[in-house]
Image 1 (spheres, rainbow, N blue to C red):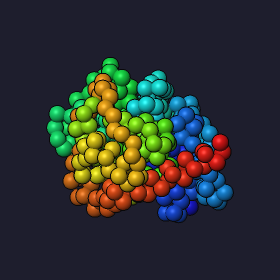
Image 2: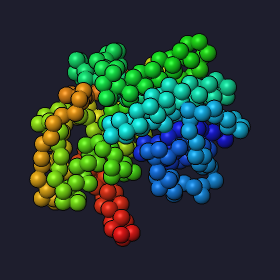
Image 3: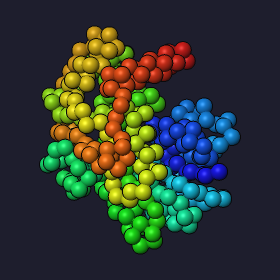
Image 4: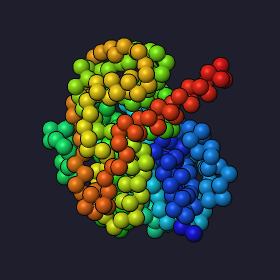
Length: 317
């Protein structure tokens, strides 16, 4: 039986990935220090015979008994609110955590997949962003701790590939949404849904004209798994190329929730990208992948999940 290690496996994307790899017939070991992940995300997997959870910080030395065929490094705070609250840990998990997990991949002769991000492109000067664009990043700005951690992680991954012949994959993940996002995640969609459902003001930063490309979690996981089982070593963009303004997203969520919350505008954060859209031509060619779930369809499922969480919180209260 093939075995996979998923760091950050109790997080939003990581937990969905653990679930999918089990469905693919693998034995999955999930490592997470629960800094931003949640035991609730993997509670349904804990009794499974092919799943094991270890609470652990991947910036420390990692020892795993037995064989490992795949290592998927997804550990890291991923929302601006999280990585600005934990800047040093974000830098450490992108550098030390990547180094430790690559060392383990070398030792076990495991295939290694790095979860990188569209943030490596910074506030892009090219639109849409192809994989050969080098980016426009402020290394000392408030977002630099995440951007540069991921850029370093990519460089380290390619160094291990070239020097130690580790079989590597790099996925550059664009904005992703769906069930298991935290209510206090801090990103646009969870913020808007939580505010709309609670009847609070819906907060849009800037004038809302800045754009994002939102991909539903099921599509993202499908792309990641296809990349993992492919033979392509260089970075691959995964995301939905359908570009939405932030204001359009806020208005859509207000409509879908039936909320009467007013939309209010606040100053745009420092270094917040004005545009963000993936060029997924490479993913289409080498993976045969493109998103299938419509944004509104995905939003309905996400809203249903958030309603359940909020009802649970009210019940506890």
